[in-house]
Image (tube, rainbow, N blue to C red; front, side, top):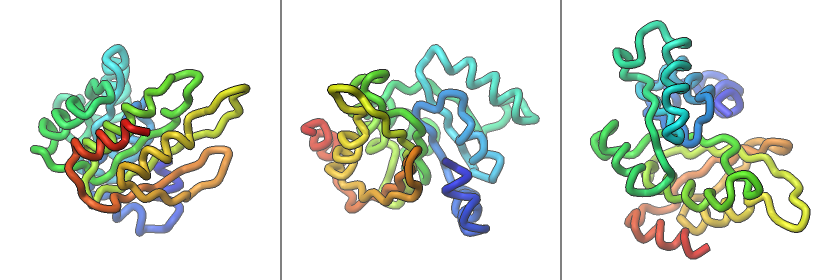
Length: 195
């Protein structure tokens, strides 16, 4: 995700990333977020479910020279995808300001994650602002008699006033989203839940 979006388009991509605040939602091991930190992001928040935060802390300590408690540039935080927790994290780390860049990789797949894509949309709405860049990597998978959830997620993002641009073709599609207009967060979340 980070390599395609920031490194493949010469220095322009790195310039956009430097001094940015970055959040990775459902980060797993946190590799894209860590790469963003190495490339100069001023703050990176790696977020995951509570049982994985200690693993993220270990990964941060293993990959960065200083102890993560002394390195405010990259932090691991618990985040269950809901607007309330996402807004609280935004308040804690950025005094209420939106993140400049929002990352999410392979977090939409109904057979494994159920309809958590709905909560992911809520979290994205809550951490992004009118100038934020939202980058989401999804893999389309065949689901016999069902759906992988990618189109449902994309439709919900569009309904929440995010304009998608496909920047990488299958097998892994990467979408860049920009906010079309700035509405009240609560109204956008309510609208996205009606999908």
